[in-house]
Length: 95
Image (spheres, rainbow, N blue to C red):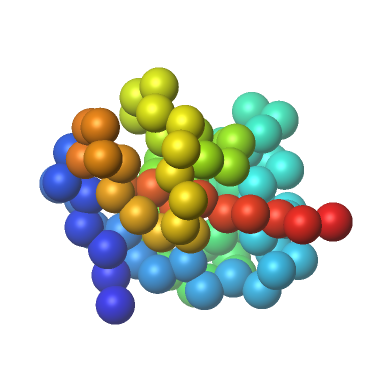
């Protein structure tokens, strides 16, 4: 089921990536390679570029940190920020 971001109004597709691909995408985002992350999601999930972009723009680079504001206590994998209402994919990658 798709997620809805109240902040921007976009529909965000479910992030059904294998753990190894989550690690790859998160690494790309953390190193500032958002375009590469969009391409990776596009290729791995077989979804459109706009949907891939929506996922990347709602995937936080640091666990717990909102993609839109300074709130840093997000504690679920897919949740709305209680401060700004932005949807966040909050991936916890354990080594």
